[in-house]
Length: 501
Image 1 (cartoon, rainbow, N blue to C red):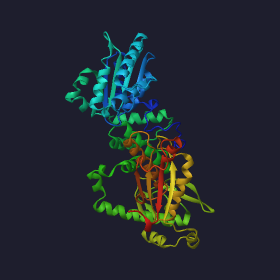
Image 2: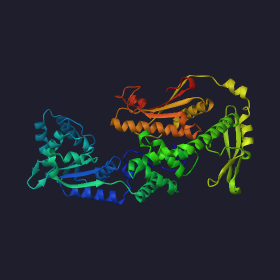
Image 3: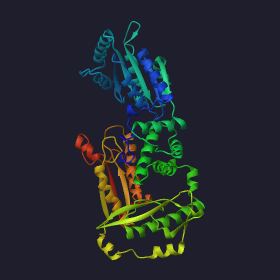
Image 4: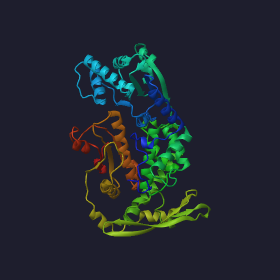
């Protein structure tokens, strides 16, 4: 959606693991070198841990890309199996096209497989991601696989990658035999501020950026929100780019980053400090300002059609004055196409460092005016109680396909036309992957649409965004067509009288 606007060749902040965008900071360089040494050195059991979103899966994919041809590996991305199912999954991952009915038959065949690989000079590596999902029983079964050896040579290297709680699993008394076999372990720490800044710039440059997009004060806010975790950095940066795009800005500033961080936070993540910020006089001032802004916007819409820019940019110049005799930074024309008309609106943008003063008598008279052609506009409007608009998303993507733009613009037009209407934006996914991940992905998709609508001038308070993951499928998830139908965001628009609680 925003790639061409920012002159990018690829989306720089996808939440999927892509080795192409792996930034070689000191932490990841060290991790990659350590793990590669462990594999090529035939060290047996290897361990990599880190909190959610520190880039473990991306590192694994980069590691497998860099391994020499004489290393044969199998990657288990979800080890939540019963032992026999797990053994069959390993066999399939190593291209062993045999279904085993018992543990014994698998071990016999697998030993022959390992011996044959050793004789051919091939090293075998078993990579188990999401290791924190392993049961104690399955962990012991994996340990027994390592007993298959040849004299002093290890026939199988086993690499665990998991969240930090996997360390607690290894510390259990029943798992001490596994713990004692781990010869190399690495824990990935989140980025510091400087690393976060370099990471963002690297991904933008890799995506084709030719100029600075994220201002330094925005990066500080992004670091504060993400705490240096790459996945959270990707999420908020992607959100910031979309928000800047819908506002027509070619850069991301602190205000944009601050707005996006608030939209992405769950209710229980809002700090006491942030709550106080909206209390007392601050809240009263914000409420008055919001009321004036929305009132002006509503009148302006009826006079001139939808407003592209948000904030005070659309105000006629006679209604505002500037302290310090500030001069306009620039003036520009915006063409708006309304029903059967084309308006050319001269707008002026002023320096953010100055304070706006309202000429209240003239402003009051302006607000009391009746809209032009009010009777005609009223006649064009048709009352409704409920409308639903469905937007489709690609697999594992949070980017809205450009073919869906017309649909979301219709939703924005409807909400602008009916100021008393409210919208519920609900994100969904198909059933592939982990339920927790699908829930987060669906929430992010919903917030993307909410941000787009907000950028079209809709008050965010009129839009409720939520994600329900793989729940409420509209088609069968066992088919590609069904999965495609389930990857969606539903915009439900209600008039005030019929709005849900």
